[in-house]
Image 1 (cartoon, rainbow, N blue to C red):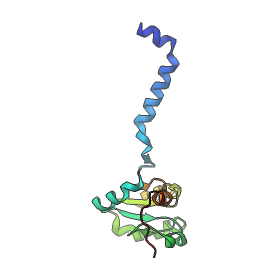
Image 2 (image 1 turned 180 degrees about the vertical axis):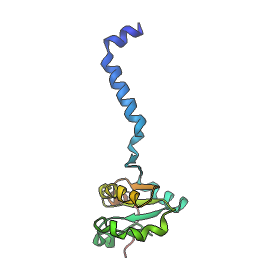
Image 3 (image 1 turned 90 degrees about the vertical axis):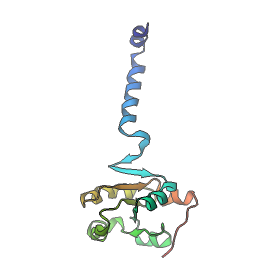
Image 4 (image 1 turned 60 degrees about the vertical axis):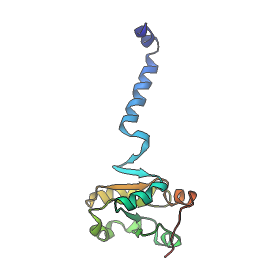
Length: 139
């Protein structure tokens, strides 16, 4: 009876198999280019428990209007030539932050090529941080 059901509705089982494969490769969409996406509420936890360094890749002007406490400003446009500033943090995880998360994702490969492997991306960026009413510091 089961085989008859499967033969009649094979397309449902094919879709089920595809969905299971997608879920196995990226559960809940929490990984992007080898970096783990974290929600704003988890950033302070990762920052304190793992001594992670927050790297803000927004433009300097955006950084000055408000940024996460203790974050380093390394604008996306100048990231490659300023990677030396991160060398003293090679043994620590990095949390990449931008306005929406898109530039942080674009920064991953550049930072991985410089020898960093433990990377996080703030899911939704500073926009999501603000929506959760989390504090920003001004320089």
